Amino acid sequence: MNTSVGQSRLGFKVHRMSRRLSTVWLLVLVFAVWEIYARLDPSIHFPPISRIFDNFRTVWLSSDPRQLFVSDLFVEQAGKSLSRFARGWALAIVIGVGFGVLLGASSTLARMYNPIVRFFASIPSTLLLPIAVQLFGIADNMNVFLICLGSVGVIMINTCDGVAGVDRMWIRSARSLQLGRLTLYRKVIIPAAMPQIMAGLRVSLGISLILMVIAELYATTVGLGHQIVIAQTSFRYLDMWSAFVVVGVIGVSLNALFSVIERRVLRWQRRAGLDAL
Amino acid sequence: MDLYVEGVNKTYGHGATAKQVLTDTSLVINSKQFVSIVGPSGCGKSTLLMIMAGLLSPTDGHIRLGDRAVDGPPLGLSVVFQDYSRSLFPWLTVERNLAMAATAYKIPKAELKNRVEHALHSVGLEGSGSMYPWQMSGGMQQRVAIARALVVEPTVMLMDEPFAAVDAQTRADLEDLVLRVRAEYQVTVVFVTHDIDEAVYMADQVVVMAAGPGRIVANLPVDLPRPRDQVETKLDPRFSELRSQVFQLVMRPTENRG
Image (cartoon, rainbow over all chains, first blue to last red; front, side, top):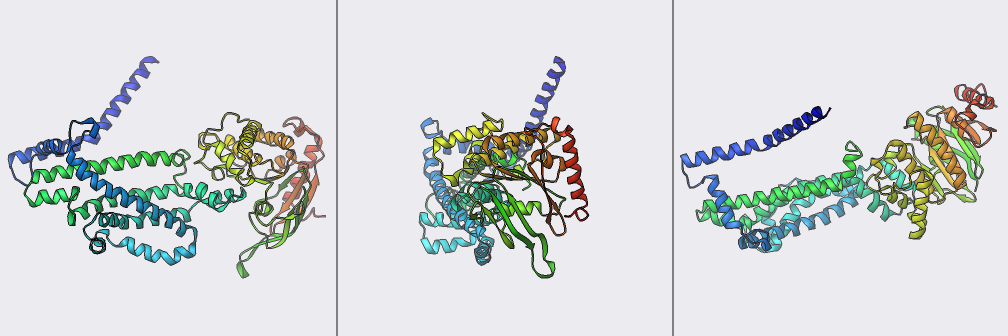
């Protein structure tokens, strides 16, 4: 009995290890090939990956725990970018969820506004950049406006569909409890639509991060995108690559953080086996 | 408070595709009675219950609870639906599900807390308030749904095939549970089922419906002694007699009319 349990536990450990290996081996291989290639055939455009990480460490990281181990440059540049992202995305969430609920609740409103919303949501958001610059000039608000405008559509559409598609049985149940309109929306309809709202937020998170960098590439004087352009135009390719790493790390971290929140908020959905609804 | 169903018709759709699901239905449910409504599928028994609950409006006729007309879900009337997973809210704990049912009643916080505890105790789920519905078995979830109906101390409780989705053992337990809480809360119960044994076992009065179009064909008093017992009551010759009488009415409604 005991040995078989021990064996299966060992088997489980081996299984888990092989799974972990399978998630990293390709990444390790890509890095290795890059490193070897860059060293055999040196080029200013493609420095070895080890030097990129070295640069990343010296330029963007620090040993100061009070600063969360990032450098002053990181605080200054990434801080600026992230603040624009946060303001733009938060605004998009407030507007997108707000109007999405209204559109989802009223089929008349939805019929009126759907063509407009869907038209604007289908325009590649980067095309809005010239408009944003026209409206706000090279100011912080331009970035915030672009991020908001580019991500609000997908949030609104998902919220609208989620609210319109709430299981009629839950609404009937809520009606039998004589819930007021406000309580009905706050406690039943919005929670029930949460899976789709979260799906919209996840997509818009990616869009917001893209627009954050794009707007900074184009017209600004501070931020990660600006750092990339400056490095590129002054032939500091190593700095350019290490700024890419910063953008990548920020993207992965924000997505991971979002996943944690999403799992927490939608715990009931997976556990209740209601994914299909 | 008595519940009156007066001349109710219900038609879905218009013109050539119109389908009449209830025709000229009248019924009086006396205060504190336990009334079963039984009939084949498609006889409109659930439609009738939803109309009583104020969740559907009749095409003709009306519903009265005491002397008030029902034109929407009234206070003092609770509904237990068949599908507990889609009537309880899985994003709320059991306690919060119960508290939500009382929102419209504006019960003070401390009193509400007592009522929630008492209702959970009555259905045998004391101490489970902080669980989520999806952490519970189907039978337990339906107990929560019953507790949610009771927490407002209703005068009438409407139950729409509440035990159709649970296994036989659980079903018997829940039947006895409903009989117990009904006595404890002194509540009028209207109980829709397609199970003839269940209809007779539970009720003071069995209303038999027929399909095509849906209508009431009989209203039989059940004179079995209380408290009912799953073994004793079902061995009673009177139980078999009533059961076969209802069975015949359900199977051959036209021959037995009048």
